[in-house]
Length: 256
Image 1 (spheres, rainbow, N blue to C red):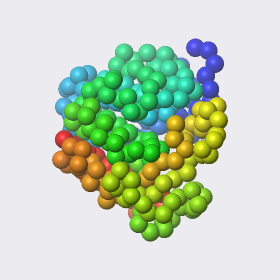
Image 2: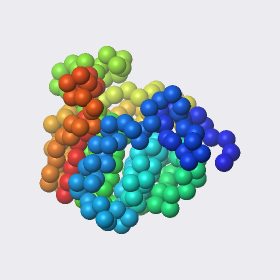
Image 3: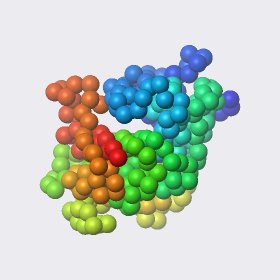
Image 4: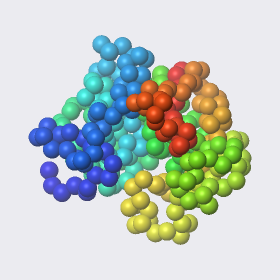
C-alpha cells in the first residue's frame, strides 16, 4: 500500500495483525469509543445500521470512523490535511470496508457530503474561529443527533490553562453573540507549509474561539437541537479521572 506518514495519535488494528501506532492503547478499546457506540445504539435501531449514515468531521487519522463502520454504520470521514487523509486512506485500503469512505475537505463543507443521520465531531470545534456558525451548518445536515466532544472556556482562570501557555488565551470577550476566549494557535504570518504540518491545530485561522460552556449549550439549542445533555461515561472512572475538570473538555450530545 506504499509509504504512509507515521501516525501521531490513533492506534488502529489492521487485518494483517499490525497496528498504526504500536505501544498505544487500541482506539477500539478506549472507554470513549465505547461511549460513542452506546449513544448511537440508543438513538438508532441496531437493525437499521446499514442504512444509518454517520459523519466523522475532522476525523484526523480515521480511528473513530473506522469503529463506527466496523459497527455497521454507513460512515463518511471528513479531514482537511493531506497527511491525515493519506493515513485514513491507508487504513481504508487495508480494511476494505464497503461502508467506509474518507474525503478531503474543509469541515465547513460538510453539507456537500450529507445529509447524515448522526454527526460525530471530536477535537475540532475549539480549533475554529466561528464555532457558532459551524454548529449551525452542522445542524443543517444532521437529521437526528450530534456527538460533540470539545474543550470550552470558563469565566475564571482554569486549571486547563496550565496545559497550554496562559498568554495564548484572551480575556473573556463576545464573538458571534457568545461569550468565550480567543486561543492563539500559531503566528499570523506562519507559512502554509508549517500550518499543514501542525496536525493538531487549526487550519486557515491562526486564532480559534473557545465558547464558554453555557453559551456552547445554548448555541446547540438555538441551531435546532431540542435535547442537549452532557455524557459522562466516556471516562472509565468518574472519581479517579479528572479529565473534565482539568481540561475543560466534555462530551455533549445534541438531539433533534
